Image 1 (cartoon, rainbow, N blue to C red):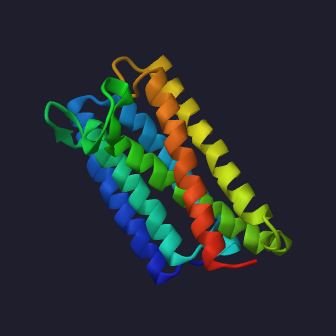
Image 2 (image 1 turned 180 degrees about the horizontal axis):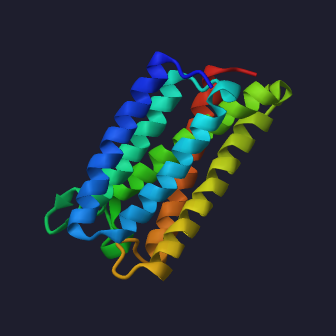
Length: 197
C-alpha cells in the first residue's frame, strides 16, 4: 500500500492529537474516551486499508481527522466545571438535555455531514450510475444517518460498560440523532448542488 505525502500529513496530525488526548484521558481516569480512542483506531485502520482503492480526496481526509479532533476535544477539554461537549455555543433555548445549541450538537451535525460526503464519494466512485437522479444524495444522507445510529449504539455500550460516562440520557440521544440527520441532509444537498445530476 502506497501512502502519499499529503496522506501521511493527515495521519501524523491525527495520531499526534489522539496520542495527546489518550495520555490526558488516562491521566484523569476517563475510561469512556479510551473506548472512543479504540473505536477511532479501528476507523483509522479501515481508512488506511482502503485508501488506494477508495482514493479519498485530501479534503475529505482532513475533514475526517478534524471530526476526530473535535470529538476528542469535546470530551477532554474542561470548561466551566464540565467538558467542551456541554458548552452552549449559541443560546437558542431549552434547558438541561434539551438546551440548544451545544458544542456536542454542532459536532454531530459536522461529523455526519462529513460521513454523508464520505458515502457520496464511495458511491460515486464505485457505482457511477447512482449519480443520475436522486439516488446518490438520498442514499448518502440516509447511510450517514444509519451510521449515526451506530454511533449511538457505541455510546450505549460505553454507558453499559463504564461508570460515570458523559453520554447523557434519552433527550441527548434523540437530539444527537436529529443533528446527525441535519448534518447529513445538509451535506447531501450541498453536494447535489455542487454536482448537478
